[in-house]
Amino acid sequence: MPLFGKKETASVTYISHSGIVSRADVPVGDSVMEGAIKNDIDGIVAECGGNCQCGTCHVYVEEQFLGLLKPMQDDENEMLNTTACPRQPNSRLGCQLEVTKALDGLVVHTPATQQ
Amino acid sequence: MSVVVVGAGQAGFQTALSLRSEGYDGSITLIGEEPHLPYQRPPLSKGFLAGKQSIESAALRPESFYTAQRVEVIANNAVVAIDRASNRVVLASGSRVEYDKLVLATGARVRKLPREGVFYLRTRDDASELKQRLNAAESVAVIGGGFIGLEVASAARALGKSVTVFELQERLMARCVSPLISEFYRRVHSGNGVKIELGAPAVAPDADVVVAGIGVLPNSELALDAGLPVANGIIVDEYLRTGDENIFAIGDCASHPNAFAGTRTRLESVQNAVDQAKCVAANIAGRAEPYHAVPWFWTDQFDIKLQMAGFSGGADREAVRGDPESRKFSVFYFRAGRLIAADSINRPGDHIVARKLLAAAIAPTPDQAADESFDLKSLVD
Image (tube, rainbow over all chains, first blue to last red; front, side):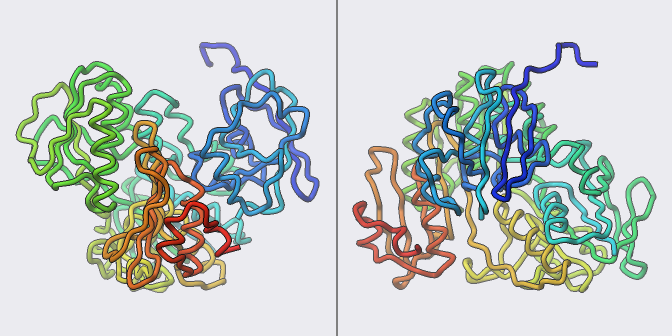
């Protein structure tokens, strides 16, 4: 039994290009990418394992959450210009989005392809 | 049909993952020596050592993934022999596992110094032990100025330790980067308070912790004992097949023909592990294709991200894009007018474009590469 209480989580919903809706309770501190990988949710590849190296965890974030996200760093900004599906104003890399309590209910859309 | 994968590192894990995404429906057995589920090695010398991430977060997938994908993981158990006559592998525990196709993803082990009391970094357990020792230390000596040594030095400085790096060569990371990049990194490390001793052997360094990162040796004994051709790794053809058509070798242990190197080579990288695993999975699933992936690598030291695409050795011309003083620049390398490599410092966009250019065998002119107002991406779009 864990000595500490259950880890705090936030709900994240992933909607695939074909419309499959998957919801996961992601531990606060994990990334949106990790939330998908650890819950066997398709649509995010994360080839480099979350090191901001590959641009294969591209997601489109639903508008109302954009203001709650940490601003992107230069490297994420540059990587987003190289993703397989076109960049949109709401594009982010899942590995760079840390899940916080404030993001509870977050909805992201995964692109048709990551590679 | 049954596939057995020996080695549960990045390459072994990816083989299982890609076999399923190729639609392979038979059994998959993943056998690893370590007591852990497959995990990523890069964070061990980077985020974990510097105290920025937990060791658990290095796991590639949770246990539920293997159950859901019907991948049987046999951990904490080494394969000690391949019985090619009966298509079986023999485990240290004595049990045998039958295969139709066998994938050797046995990886590599650290090269050691003939000296006691030296730490090395390869496995999760190595990293945990080193982290504990670092926490208790004041001074750290790093033997070897390659990627691992310099990442350890960077992490140790981030923890406030006094750090000296000893490198036998006259420059840092000499095997992998150009002199220009080596010199840039010497300045980055010096600027962050790391003492760098070049061209000097580390004779009994006086430090609380001594860590060596002096390269690895391929784990090819299993193949050798089974009568498969071995020379600096397990010899495979362009389809990653060994001398036995039912046995493949991938990742750090595989000596493969590499078009970008222009020769047979052995690569120790996440890219090579992942792409060879995908290739072998496609081959097993009946979609035979030769291995022809652009090699790329990365290292994180202090606040600098270096990403390398291709091999820069043998370049006859270099073009620098961006100002090195700004610590955001790329170096493009050419040979006989062809682009052969690019090293990018804090410029991931350049890196991705370089990979695309190399894959398509398209070369900008050196002038275009050096001209920041020229959109390199326009050549591949």
